[in-house]
Length: 448
Image 1 (cartoon, rainbow, N blue to C red):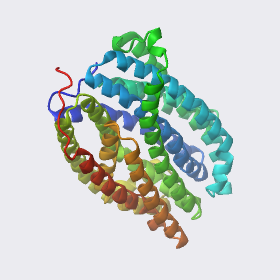
Image 2: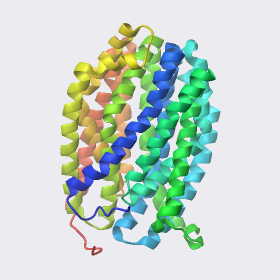
Image 3: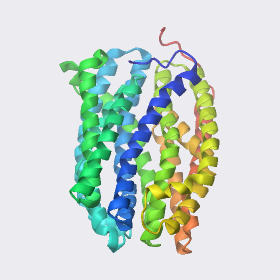
Image 4: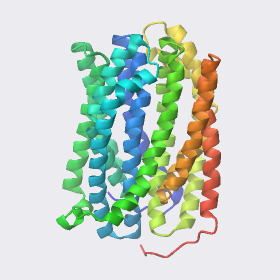
């Protein structure tokens, strides 16, 4: 099921590769949405706010893993695009070792620091217990997240975006069943939702591993493939760590927003949490397009096909803009009515907070398209540090806007923090892209 993305119509290839990732991301959102809906309905608004508050921390952890594993497999995609299968296999083995090391370090650091982090985030006392129980289970299950994310990234690097989707669908359905059992039957509260997520994600990772072992001959690794090559590992770290820190920088900005939001109380936090879940369902298309562009650009960079890279960016931008306009209109006018899926108490009051948030972000989807496409595409071309500077700009925009808004007690101001970050980062990424592509000409590295 490997897919060579260095030949064929760029727009068609990008669209077909994106759709399974998009659907997979939607199902992945069902993990968190199921947690949010079931916790909000059967545990209460304080627990709902707790899960929402932890969402930023989960994004910090999982985002770091997604970034670092995607970065390690950029090298894999480049070798695959160049037709160098021996080097591709060595990069897979090297990336697996590096992912294991990162997983151990991240698990230890997160479990040690979470209590202090929750206090620094001004977590209200009425939701602290549920928040701590939830996030500690997530931290203990980082290995499950790492297994799936790395193996899924390897499959995508070879052009297979469908198999990770299938395994994620299974995991999402299992997660919903486990949520119901742990929360309603065993009354485990928010921690039960976390256990359900970790178990389901672990199973999806195991399914990926079984599939690769049985069905992907291109990934059959031998003893010599596992011999550590310091230059290769250094190359992967040079790309992977900046991509990981890019996600972390974004997450840190979100944590600042959550800290400012917590000052306004658990009702505002619950409304913000529900609105975030609604927004994230609709914006997964941008994330999927970004993931596609990382693989597309990596393969074509390896093949030396800069003209195809330019065409790919144009096609992906057009697809993203059309989707942004359509979904932006929907969310702006009717998005708030989805609040009823998340809360059972003070619905009308919380719906007002949801409506404010969704109206603020829905008019800002175009710059969000730019951020996802061009950040991931540039990283796929092997430039790890440049997009991270745009991430720093995003952090400054998001944190600055939320801190100012918090000073004035403005919920709307906090909701505008992300749009401010998207505009700033998107502008910088466009400048970077045109500078990188200036004067680039195709190289004939292979004939396929």
